[in-house]
Length: 394
Image (cartoon, rainbow, N blue to C red; front, top):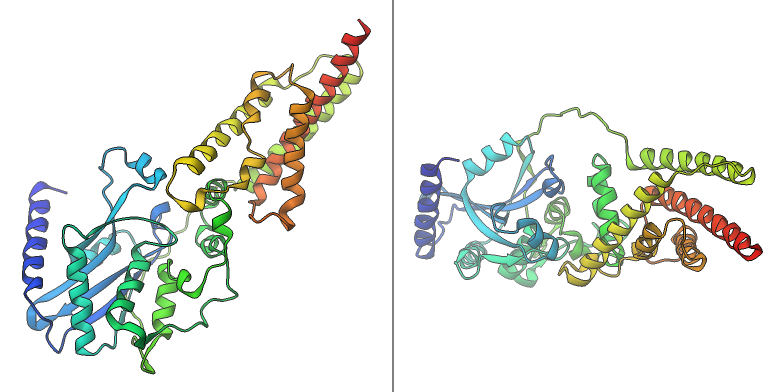
C-alpha cells in the first residue's frame, strides 16, 4: 500500500473517532453482524466476524473489526507462539472492508440486528469506547478471546439479559478440537501440525457460549437468538459469494507416514534377516533422521508447554511419544542403553493402546510414526542384547 493511502486511512479513522464520540445514531441507523468465509491461509481458515454500523443520516458506514494484527511487528512469530502478540480493534469503511474480502475471494454475509434505539446507542457507545487508544489492544486467545467472542461479549453487554442465545446449536457438545477439524479438511498438514502442538485443553467439551469462538457458530447463534421473544437478527443476506477454486491435493500426512511405516517394516525385516546370517546391513541415515526429528519436536512441545501463554498447548500428551529421550537415542544410536530404549517403547505402546482412555485425541498419522519408531527401537534393543551376549562370552 502506498504511503498516501496509509495517511488517508489514518486521518479518516481519527476523524471518524472524534466525530463518533460526540455523535448519536439516528433512528434509521442499522447495526449488522458481518460473517466472512474461510481464506486460503491458516490464520484465516476459520473465517472472520465484524460489526457494521450504517447510518445514512450521519454519513456513517463503518466496520468495527476486532481481528486486526500487525505482521510487521518485531519478533512477530515468536510473540505469536508465546501468546504475547497483541490484536486490536480497528475501524474501516465498509466499502474497503468488502473489497478486501472480494479480493481474497472470501464470502461475506450480513445479518441485520433488530435492536431498539437505546440498544443501538449502547452498542455503538461500547464500540467507540473499545476503540479508544488505551482500550483497542488485547491479548489474543484463539478459543476464549478473539474477533468472534469479542462481538458476542459486546452484544451481551449492550443488550443485557434480554438477549437469549439458543442452546440448540451445541450439536452434541463437541470438544474444541472437534469444532476446528471441519475447517482443516483441506489443510491436512496444518491439521497434523496443530495436533502436535495442542494438548489436553483442546479436548475439553465446549459450552454453547464457547462455540461462538468460531465465526460460523456466532452466525448460527445470532440467527436463532431472541430479545424478549423477538428474533435478534433478520435472515442473512449474501454480500459476496466466493468463487469455487479447485486445488491440487498433495499427499496427506496419513498417506505419507503409512507409506513410511511400510518401508520401515520391510527394511527392518531385511535387517533382522541379515543379522541372523551375520550379514552387514543397517539404515543409520533413516534412524538418525527419524530420532533427530522426534527429539526436536519434543523440545518444541516442552518449550510451548512451559513458556507459551496459549493454554491449549499445555498438558500435551504428545510428549509421551515425542519425548526428549530421543536425543539420547540419536546420540547413542549403536550403543543405546537397553532400558532407555525400553522406556521409549513403553511410552509408544501407551499412546497406541491409550486412545480409549487417555484424555487427548491423537492424529491418525501419529500412529504410523509411533509404530515405525517402535520397530526401529526394538531392532536396536535386539542388537544391544546380541552385542551384550557377545561381550559376556568374550
